[in-house]
Length: 388
Image (cartoon, rainbow, N blue to C red; front, side, top):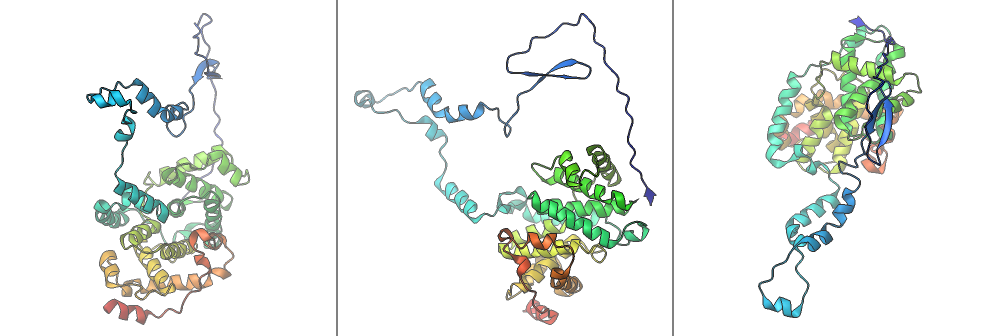
């Protein structure tokens, strides 16, 4: 284990002296001039909105009118000239969409299922991606389950407090589940190699989620915003330095498969309802608060156990049918130790000091799964259902 200390770098800024007789360039109108790098004049480009110029919207709206005006229509039929009927709309013919495709798109939008719109869940690639994820989780470096023994200034309770804070930030900024899971993965792998003092632990968490946001989010939180979220305890420069250190220690291997990834794929493959998936996600995030007992398990195994427990809680007839066993590769006997631990965490979740995850899943967005009461767990029932 190695220790680190953040030091403020002293940079010597050199002034760039320009020649007195340097020619000036006339800038076109509408361009702002910004003085940087010792007074050098640079033009600030006009901003783009979602990859399109501001005037692109007007051009798009008037596409039909301009096309009809600039298009020469040649009429062979003389009746068209005599009756002077309106010419056919060429734009409508070019942009015509099949009615069947329109109905499919509308059905997807009404269902609100965004998973089917992602390339990862296209039917042609699902099996190959599932196989690849299983191979990848075996090849990726695991965090050490006993790394906290070498952390002289940290405890598992301190880690739970940090995970709870990151969960509240993710909920406040409406981040995706994968960002939160990746952040915890970065932290555990980083702490497996580097000893961190308590005063810098929040800095590690902020930098880890900043990295995860850049990997998963369309609009990640700005580094100055992260400085504000830490109560201005750390400057943007310190957060950037820590971000660079985490990426270096992790050897830039930033995309491991997480429990969230396997839950999403599994639920979409077997057409499980939204409530079951949300409950499985809730259980998997409660597991992240524990840490020590679960770092030895593969993400796919944690995901399978979460889905089995979720289906059992919602009173499904077969929590782990034979089809699930064949697809995941796990029998209920293999999942039994994990399911029992998750059931205990699920039952004790209202009594924990950290309540950010519970508050997140009490909302209507997640079907209020945090308000569900766990059922009594009898593993013999699972075994009987699997054999049938």
